[in-house]
Image (cartoon, rainbow, N blue to C red):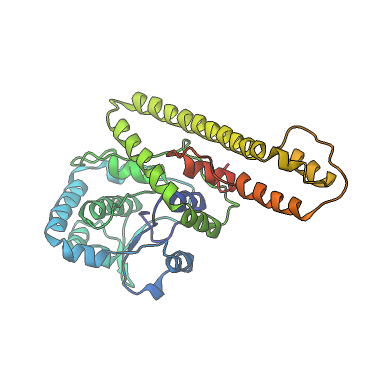
Length: 333
């Protein structure tokens, strides 16, 4: 679930989220899907975007929301850092407003009473950017806590946003935020979102197995005592991924060779020099065989068998097959 805005402003964030998550989401101040920004309508139509209707969430969890509101207002009253911390980042526009449907009337009145609210217009209230970011950050955590039907993971692409909400809160709850930054391979900006979605749908079972690895990594990182431990664990994670992908690559190569060897006598039935040259160039066979001129029906059948087997997955199934297949299909590098 992206915060603090409805739309996803960063293409890299979106590509990573679509590849590794079931769906992407954000907090909506309205209930009509026709009001979705154009950038989200495609994802919604493909079943990749799951809107969170905040009015329903607040109403269904009004008791917990009142406790949340109390903590939020207490932070504003006692934590000057929220007002003084720099939230400067390279962005097209600042985050200085909130839809009124994302807040209770009590909070709006308190913000106005304390002189924090700058104004109100067209269903929005205007606030200092840090306050708006802080509210949306802790609201995202509140949503993650109360939604029971899904595992919701708050996420943002700006480090300063997460620092404002999770680093210096007086009453902040302990939170675990697993970020695979610089560890997991991320699709290049040139890879189309539609290709990522198609790939994920094709390799759904591999993704589920990779999630098992993801969960185990979370458990290991929770045991880290400090930032140095976390950095060491993430470095080990990155190395593990590279080693596993390399090993799978070797298995894939062995699988190709094994397929060829089991039909090696049949290769003599392929009597086409150009075809042999293509197989050698592709690395499918390593021994140059001087074929006879001419080609027969049996040659075509053998070739079909070779192609079917060559593109097959290694027999060894691991938690990393999802990454291996993504690399092999050009989704990641």
